[in-house]
Amino acid sequence: MSKPKIVVRETIRLPQGFRAAGVAAGLKKSGRPDLALFVSDLPAAIAGVFTTNQVQSATVKLDRRRLAGGVGRAIVVNSGNANACNGPAGLRDADRMTALTAELLNLSKRQVFVCSTGRIGLPMPMEIIEPGIRQAVAALSPRGGRDAATAIMTTDTRIKHATVTLPVDGRTVTLTGCAKGSGMIEPKMATMLAFLMTDARVYRPALQASLAAAADDSFNRISVDGDRSTNDTVLMLANGAAANATLQPGHPDWPAWVAAVRQLTLNLAIKMARDGEGATKLVTVRVRGARNDAEADLAARAVANSLLVKTSWVGDYPNWGRIMDALGYSAAKVAEERVDIGYDDLPAARGGVWAGTPLARLKRIQRRKAFTLNINLHLGAGAAVVYTCDCTEAYVRINYGE
Image (cartoon, rainbow, N blue to C red; front, side):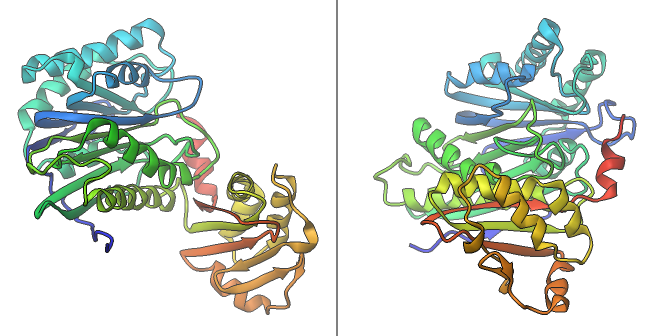
């Protein structure tokens, strides 16, 4: 069965039965949109994956509990404040955000989810957020996806969204997603938020399984700076407005659904890596030949997170020696004399030593806005991939303080 085609749109076309809004509540000094709302007009099955950081925002704690109910109707999101490390007050504020949203939409607050992103440790300015929620409810529209995708951004330089359409039972099903994430990014997961919406009818446990599997191949495959956030959340709503037979394993279109979710999440994840804070290059690190997949993953992450490696990518000198160093200190088994390293299709090192490729040819590859490091450890069949970026002076300027 052919894979569904990813259609990336400048303006998000929300699936049937969804509305969204993004407004400038006043949380950001810049005056940019900072509060988003996504609403399903029908009860929707909900799935979610969250940060594995031991320190978690109030919103993550609340959403984890509510996910057990299995039904979602709305997601309210603020940027500019993480609502993390705020103690009991943070939980009360997160709950209040859902309660007010539910009241205005005539819903149960247990079917309203909440996400926050921004500075950690600052009290939530509810005197700004509550009027913002009222403003967002009034602005809800089937054409409000772009505004909502804009409002969830923090240090992002561009909107991140994508749409997949696929046939299910002869009907066209739409799966749309938007995400934010630019810094404090390294799985599992990142200082990232992602919201996926579909008009397909999907069995809730199967929805959770397809999202979790897709996240492992996408959101958990990116790294900007090796820092794991307190707020990472991915939520997926499936409201069944397309009226297809319920998707689950055994349905003839289930494989296509799984592929569609994976393609959408991977599309969003790569956009986050490409838009890393201060980044100028997207770098794909592929490791094969490890003793197993777990060790391949360890080796790939050591390279992707090395500041020595990442800063070398900023220039045009392909310093493969730093890559060898990172592989060597990783927790993966490495035999120096077996390691091959290539930049795209050009070998830089074979058997742990220079491959003889003219430096000028390797430099041309590293000057590109996107390239791949192909690493073969020649010890087994293990393989892994991580999507990352270079680290420039701009990253420091963005993160030095307030």
